[in-house]
Length: 171
Image (cartoon, rainbow, N blue to C red; front, side):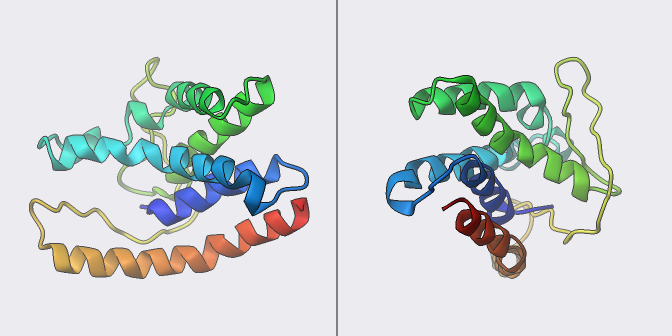
């Protein structure tokens, strides 16, 4: 299961790729927005961890194309990028979450990309990813945090160079 570092860096990379002459001074809010909305679909874990829902509720409507489009519309509006390109870029940043989950799920999980038309969770298992399904109310927090930090370190090594190359290419 990709963690927030991978999702955030991919979302920020999508926003960076859409901008010519990108600079951290003028584009930091857009990059942060792209990173945030790419992580946002996992907020559905609140239902699992805090409200006691079954883990299978994860990756439902919040990982769908419709949810990504709504989040993209909201983000474009908040960023005052009210043209179609702004909507499309932020929608793609959000949708990257569900697509990455689809690509990395082999046995369990996936993402309900076509919700509300279908609740089927798609998974391709393109590559094996780190197994990590924590439940803080059931498992001790120490080992969860240790494993999460370990995976986040790997994600930084994998996805940060991609982000840096895109920023360098678009500057």
